[in-house]
Amino acid sequence: MTPTAPDTDPSRVDGAPQAPPTAADGFAYHRIPRALPHRRHWFRPLVAVGVSGAVYVVMLIQLLVPLLLVTLIWPGAGPSEMLTDPLNPTDQLLGLGMLALLLPAVLIGTLAGYGRAGIAHSVFGRFRWRLLGRAAIVVLPVYVLLNMVLSLVLERDALVVPPFSAAVVLAWLVVLVLAPLQSAGEEYLFRVLPLQALGTWLRWPIVGILLPVPLFVLGHGYNLLGQIHIALFAIVMGLLAWKTGGIELPVLLHAANNWTLFAIAPLIPGFTEQGEVTVEAMIVATAPMLALVAGIWWWYSRREGLGLWEPQRGTLRSSR
Image (cartoon, rainbow, N blue to C red; front, side):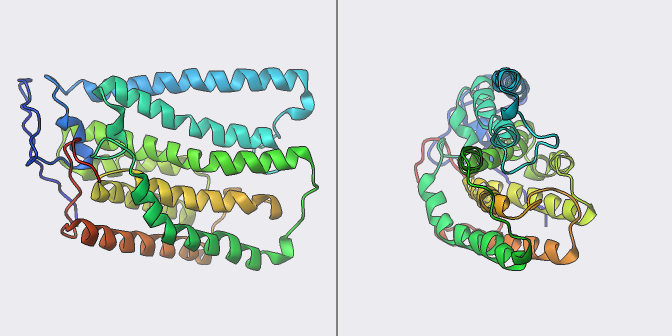
């Protein structure tokens, strides 16, 4: 079933001034840029995407140049050949830090394009920490059990205790801090930016949900089964952002999964490397994710008094 999101949209294609939204108006997440009282909207997604890209490049240079200088001065602090060593703090800083930079880049691009960065978070113009906290009570324990407890049991013969050193401790601390930000960065790039850019022009959220899926899939190096899981994850996260009127719960699910995986990676060699995925592994990863999202979908609908396929709407003046 394809979700559609009819909304009260006072804008006109001819570029005439838009009346500010009233309390009776409501905009779904992908259409929330239309709630801002601009004379013209058509060029604003282009500005948002362009500025996001430019800001990301600048910040990436600011990350890479100091690391390069440190490596030249102190060769032992350099990255590994594959950039995937969980015991190497430089690997973790590069791998996670480069993606974490997407978060501020998209927020700055949203501010430049639409005039308000808060629309990237939700239809209420802010990040709903209370909503995230309530959902985390269920989501985080599920991923701790799946990704940490179950993995440690299944991989018990492969467990190793890494040498205790400053580098190992630093690598682990970098992961604990940056893994949630890396997950958020990916969500803001692949969910927020396309949903709101395309939603400024089009009423159908499904376009902004599906269009970035191939790019998200190409960013992962799994086999076919693994890529199917990644594609399903991307589609479901896009639908969840549309349904809940914000990016908070997709960020939570993404961060809970990645954080718990990276946290135990030093104990299981090759644990986070992307490659062959078996049918059993795909089922173990996909089924709980779909069940969690279905439960959250039902819970949020009941909580907000929404129909099952009715999205959360806002005017940027509401608060929850």
